[in-house]
Image (cartoon, rainbow, N blue to C red; front, top):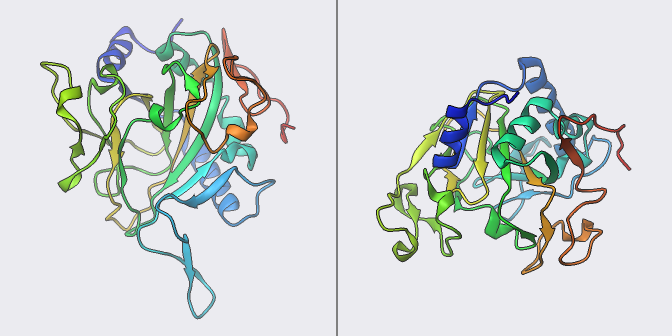
Amino acid sequence: MGLLTEAQAQAFREKGYLTVPPALSGAEVEEMREGLERVMLDRSAARPELLRNLHGGDLYHEEPDGTRVFNSAVVVQIVNIWEADEVYFRHLYHPAITQMASELIGHPHLRVWHDQIQYKPPMVGSQTGWHQDFPAWPVLSPPDLVTAWVALDDVTLANGCMRMVPGSHRWGESPGLGSGEDFAPRYDPSRIPEGAEVKVEPVEVRAGECSFHHCLTWHGSDINRSDRPRRAIAVHYMPAYTRFDPRGHHAIEHLMEVKPGEILKGTYFPDVYNQGPLTPPAFPFK
């Protein structure tokens, strides 16, 4: 029996995104916040693949008293935090999230492509421009991945919630997609199907809630103008038929243990759902 109603599944098919009630309890959200803090302070069991300012430059500067303060125009990006901290490793296998991702993808066997933290600190958290995920992953095919984006804070327009364009996942890849004035999507009108409307919808979510989106859905998030952090964990789930199809390069390509054209699987792309939730192995995983 599915966790999603037919109405929810249909909404995802039409819009390319869907928000569901809390997947994490308040205690689980706090545990993940603590895990993020361990990784950022280099106190975790291992290191992630990437920990950087998405906008380039340093994340912090040091005050005269030795305290670290975030610089302006910062988005903290961490890729494969699951390699660094057991809390995030277990999160990959979350039984309800993986089942819902399987239902939305329409395939009973899922693996993880990678995960990603995007943390916009209070007042200085910068934009994440309008984009599609799949064109940033020019090593995979086909474009059938779904992201489970779980908020670790209440996320609103004030602190930089995601914004989506309904139905954009049905328009194929959109080269040149970017951000214009007032954070409106900038795009090539000739690539928009006749009769389609480019309409922006904010996706506000509470801490613990999960927002799913298709890998071709247009999305972005504006500046965090509030005095509250905006932390979230995104896990990119792929159906088990996803192949390594190098048309470009990606930061975690070095983790691949397969040849071009082969099914993407291996140590760093774990099976997390197969006809039902799977139990995570012991951590550390290798």
